[in-house]
Structures are given as structure tokens and as C-alpha cells.
Image (cartoon, rainbow, N blue to C red; front, side):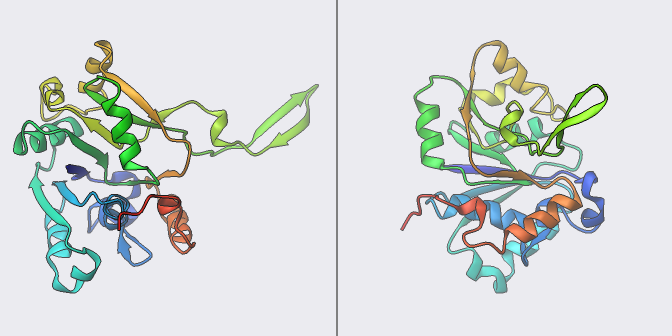
Length: 243
């Protein structure tokens, strides 16, 4: 099964790291974030990757073809599809699906990590009879809450993820017909094809209650650096390892 990873964007919100490299190639504990993401799939037995590249694609190509990195790849199958510099997420997905037609695919963003049980996600999707499944996650808890009465703070509490709603966490399962819902290479998947599919009740949500973390800012990059030194790392915790 093909795992399409969207790795072609500019990463402008973390420009401190992305002036000379694509955001998925930012190093976390000495290895690219993209490698950590691919490892989540590979240790579960899913290692057929399609990297949708664009911005500074040569950096990605060079790293994955460098002989000294081969020990980290463990026989993974990796295809690079140049989806263009200005192409949006919908266009990148459509181009990759055209390159590998008539296949159910997994698709995710190249800048988010989660301990997703892939086989469970697929089983859920295949039971729903829809064209697409999105993994729903809780947004990161960023702010504490104040309970105020009469001008005085009565209670302060750290905000927890479960207080908020659900957001798009990536880790999609898409049927081949989904590419027909993308109308332009310059159209984001999130504001184009996805709402069209929702309007036809063709999207189901797989709720993921465990670890999920994006890397949009330097602060989040530094947080991932700390987490990467834990044992096990949170994005591999409790995964069913394929032996």
C-alpha cells in the first residue's frame, strides 16, 4: 500500500530552520522529521512510500540516496514525485494518485507525528463505506484557563487537550475517486476536495486519543527534540511492531 507524504511546502512558519531545507528535513535528534514519520509506518510493516516533493526537493533526494543513510532505511521502497514548487496540498495528492492510479492510499503531512495504529485505521476506514477517512486529533493545549468571579481569580488550571474539539490530524485513507474532487493544482485539499467530500457525506473521522504533535514553530521543534530522547519515543509508544 502506498503511503503518500506531503513534503513539498515552504514551511514559512518555521523559517529559522527552512531557509536551506524543506520543513520535513528539519533534524530531530539527528535525523530528519520525515524519517521519524516514515519510521512510524515502517515498524508496522508499511514501507512503500511516495514523497510528494517541491521546495528544495534535491535536499530530500540527496539524503535518501546517500549511502551513509542506508542503514536507517531498512529496505524501504521510496519514490519521489516532484509535484512543483507552488502546488497546494490538493494538487500534490492528485498528482501522486495519478502516478499510482486505482489504488487505496494513505496520505499524511510531512510535519506531524503520531502513534497511529495503521492497521486499526485501515480497518476502521474499510468498515465505513466512504471515500475518505481523516484522523481526528485534539489540538495541542496552549493556554491555561482562569475562573474569574468579582474580578478575582478563583481558579487557575492548565488547559488540557480534551477540553478542545477535534481537528484534522492528517493520516488520511483515500479511495481512488478522491482525486476527482481536486479541481486545481493550486487548491488546498483542506478547503477544496475535503469540503466537497464532506458535502456528499463521504468523509469519516477516525478519532485518535493518544500522541499527536505537529511541528509548525521552532518551539514545537525543540519540544520534539526533548521527546525524541524518551524511551520509547511518544510517537512509537504502544504501536504493534511488525516483525
